[in-house]
Length: 125
Image 1 (cartoon, rainbow, N blue to C red):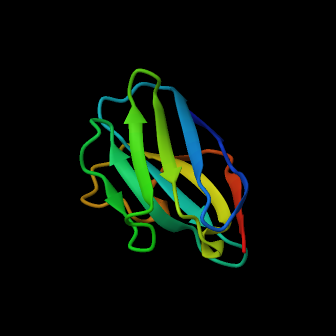
Image 2 (cartoon, helix red, strand yellow):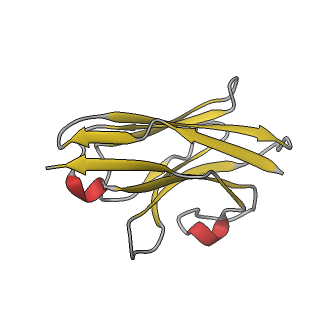
């Protein structure tokens, strides 16, 4: 199994910044993808960003390009999501997901086998 523990969520004003962290532990995998998804009340879990273990192959949803940055620290087995210029529409529960399958893309939540508990991000106007 893989355990994911998220932290860094909170309440911020529009235009503010937050950095989310997701620490992974458990079974070791040679190759994997870590992704960030978010889910607002009554909506599906939507793709935000993902990154390969090597640090290459990053991808972002159009709605966050230029504002969010995903990175990975392999020594700490931790993935980060730096969120700048936050907007009220960014309000959601943010989840860290783990995928070790050989997909071409990793933008659907069904492609991820393990998830963290989620961390609430609320952006006020």
